[in-house]
Image (tube, rainbow, N blue to C red; front, side):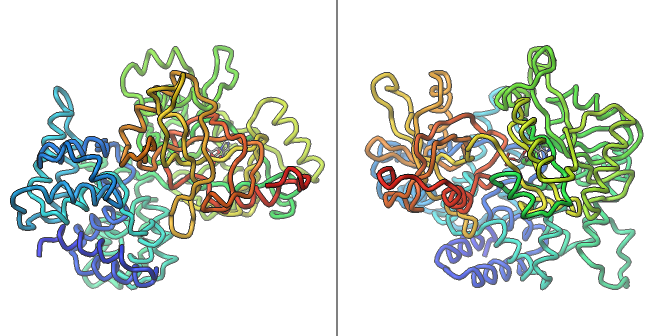
Amino acid sequence: MPSFYEFALVCQALGQTQSRLQMAELAGEFLARLDPGEAAIAARFMVGRTLAQGGTARLQVSGRAVWKIVAAMTGGADQGEEIFAAAVDFGEAIAMLLRLRPAEPEPALTLAEVARGFIEMAEIEGRNSRRRKLDALRALFERMSVLEGQYLAKVLIGEMRHGMSEGLMLEAIAKMAARPVAEVRRINMLEGDVGRVVRALREPSSVLGPQTTAPDAPARDAAADAAAETVAAIARPAQSAPRDGARQIRPIKPMLAQPAPNVAEVFRLLGDRLALEHKLDGARVQIHCADGAVRIYSRRLNEITASLPEVVESAARIGPRRAIFDGEVIAVDAAGRPLAFQEVMRRFGRVHDVERMRDAQPVALYLFDLMALDGELLIDAPYAERYAALTEIAETHGLGVAGHCTPASLAEGQQFYARAIAVGYEGIVAKALASTYMPGVRGRGWLKIKSVRTLDLVIVAAEWGYGRRHGWLSNYHLAARDERDGALIAVGKTFKGLTDDDFRAMTERLLALKTGEQGGRVSVRPEVVVEVAYSDIQRSPQYAGGMALRFARIVGVRSDKGADEADTIATVAAAFDRQPVRPAADRA
Ligand code: AMP
């Protein structure tokens, strides 16, 4: 049976399985049956990713484009409304379109062929690139049976709807390789892509190179191997990287911070062995320096080196040394004063007009961590040690470091926070001196305190506006993430906070993500994350999570965050619990 069809069958079975354990077993057994290359592809596809994370390639095909291609191919364009009303999700809607064909092709494609198709499409550039890309996609759909096409559509829009989160996929990979889950998680922290995790476990030689794996060598510890590879990559001069790019220096997932309500709580949770830092309102960057070459990655591990030449120039000051820095890039005005988050995003990922934008919107780099130095991976060293090494290298080479203090008492900590807010920072980040750098983990090592109550929420639907907002999608349905299963739980709606231009841009963005429409309510693929300020949280039986934000207002679009990084329903519940008790008359 061709492997893409088999993949679709397994996904379908996953959708009918409730137990996490059974899901992990089912997926793990399937991955184990495939050869390593195809297993890596299947792992990615199963969590709704078309390409490996961390590269520069982007597919950029919207749900709307997929719908149009398949509707044109099958002649079902005029049945859109009925199909969307009847289908449970986008994949099923595409399946319904595909059933309109007079004949269904036999399954024929392998996972490797589909993956190659995605890579080729992502590489299409130049004249008519959009049309050529869509033609290539249509050719793929034309060769697919209904079930394959249904799952191709799901992978393309990243909405699998079978409950296989990245965390559960790591459990499946652990089953595949018969390794402890903790070890697999650790490799994922370093590899930053489930496909590469599969390869690291199944084919350590593909990661390490043949010289390190003599046929009779004892089985090596895979986590140690992956760590060794990262170190080797740091140690390897960038110029000597093979031309195929397969062994570039890889970005490591950034460590994340948990929210905390105030400084006293931070002291209670971390004790007094902590440091406090200014929380800069910019965009996260990871900077890899090796022998004078600099690469910059975004929070989502996309390479953005070309967009930020002045950051490259700053980091290049460390000369031939090798390092991986963690930090924040903020937008500044002509006098060097910080500007709001939205401004910095005008620079991120930009490939055209970079020099003009460099003048129009200058940025500044502030470092706050050091993950590797001179070929040594530091993520297992305590924060205090990493920070000491960071300040040393930053001072030597004139690099900016986020404002920092190690308070001797709670009162000193509170003063640091009060001053930070007075000067205009969005808050502070508290860091346990003994904490290691935990890639991709939102643990207790880092706690963020913000002055304004905001949540980062995902837009899951929008309503057509009326009156002045006629023609725009304006009332946005906001959802928080359930960490246990990745579900999105609505916690409020708002049309406040956006300018007319913002509404126009948001309408266009959401229409490209549209998956259905009913009674003026447009459902969208959950990809847009917005920062939402609110007055307080009410109990509300109308909402599935039992809570709703009052006086919600959008304060910015978090284009650096994906839905998987939105705030969780547990965070909303914690914010609800922390609210001062209000008079009975005011309670819902
Ligand atoms: P949030 O975006 O609200 O989840 O807050 C966490 C983010 O704050 C991190 O991902 C960083 O981009 C940013 N940040 C700003 N300053 C710091 C700092 N000193 N330490 C760690 N993260 C920081």
